[in-house]
Length: 476
Ligand code: FCB
Image (cartoon, rainbow, N blue to C red; front, top):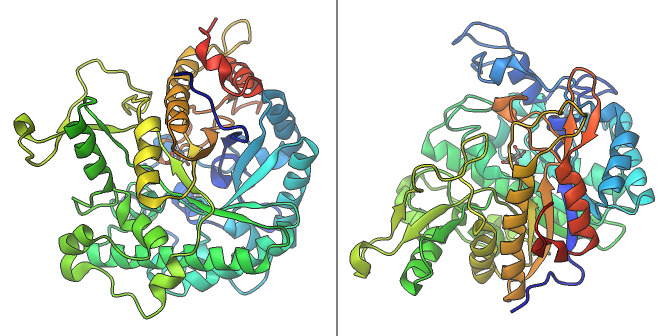
C-alpha cells in the first residue's frame, strides 16, 4: 500500500518565546519566572529574589540564561526570511505573557504586542501561516508571586491576557494553542524541582495546580471563540506520552494502548489525567482511584469550563516506551520492555522510537476523536559548523525521515492527522540544559548570532516541496 499525507497537511517548524527571543528586559517586558530562575546567584538553599521561593543556582547548565539566546527579538526579519528559504508553510511560536502583561496591574504593554504584530505581518507576507501558543512556560513573575497555578484566579489572569492577544492579532491569526505541555511545567517544573520554580509540591497541591491550569486552558479557549475576528482553530499542545507495542501481536498492541491511556503512577507522565478533562470533561477513573482524597474537588461548572470543543489536538512527541502483554500472554499486567543495549539515542539520551509517530496519534485519536497535529518532534544533536561552513546534521535527517514515514503510515491508515511542526526552527535555550543541546534546523552561533541553515533544513525543504514523497528516496 502506498502511503501519502492528506492534501491539506501542514508543514511547519516550532519555537517558544523564552527559548529564542532574548531581549529579556527590553520593550517594556516584565520578568518571567525563567528570568529569575536563570539569574538567581544566591548560594544553594537560600531564598532567592522571588519572595518565599528557594532557587538553587546550577540548575541550569553552566548558568546559561535566555537573556540574549538566538536574539530572535532583534532578528525577526532575518528569521522569517530563513523560514521562507526552508519553505515552511506554517510557523508555531509562543507569545511571552510577561512581554504583554508585564506587571499584572491591568496594563497591557503595547510595545510587546507590537513585536508579535510585526512577526505576524512578516509571516503572512512570506506566505507562512502563524500558529500561536499562548503559554510556553515563561510565567510572569507577578503571577508567580500571587501563587502561580495554585491560585484559582490564574484562570482569569490568563483569560485577560488571552483577550489582549486575540484582540490584537486575531484579524490575521486563526490557529491557537492554549498551553504547551502542562505535564512539564506542573511536573518536573513545579513538582520535581528540575525547572522553575523548584517548589516540590505534594500530590494534592500539584493536582490542584493542574486543575487551575486546565481551567486556564478552558477560559482561554472560550475567550478566543468569543472574541476572534476570523474563525479560529483552537487546540492545545500537550506532551504525548506514547507506549508502543514491543511486537505487532494483537495482545502487545492492546497492552500498549492500555498503558498509553492509563494513569498508573503518581506523576504527570501520562496522557489521560489532563487530556480526559480537556476532551471528555471528566478525570479518568483509574487516576481518581490512584489519588484518592488528593484529587481535586471541582466546583460546579469547572468541568464544563475545562472541556471546550477543540479543533485540533496538538502532540509533542519525541520518544516512547515499549510495552507488551503480561507474562506469557496470560492477560497479566502489561510490562515494559527495555530498549536493548546500544539502542539509538539523541544527545539528551532519549531513546529513538520512530513508531511513536504511528502509535501515539493513532491511540490518542481513537480515544479523543479530535484531529491530531504533531506540534513538536525533533532531535537534540551535537551539531557544529564544519570547516567549510556547512552543518552536516545527518542524524537529524535520518531521525526525521524515519518518524515522518511512521506518521504518514498512520495518516494513510485513517488516523486524522493535520500537520507536523519540527522542533525546532533554530537552536535555542533548552531549559535546564541551557545551550548544551541543539534541536534546530538552523544553527545559531551564540557569540556572533550568525545563523546557518543545516543540511536538515535543506532536506526538509524537499520533503515539504514534494509533500512527503521524497521520504521514499535515499538521503544523498
Ligand atoms: C518540549 C518543550 C520544548 C523543547 C522540547 C525539546 O518538551 O515543549 O520547549 O524543550 O521539549
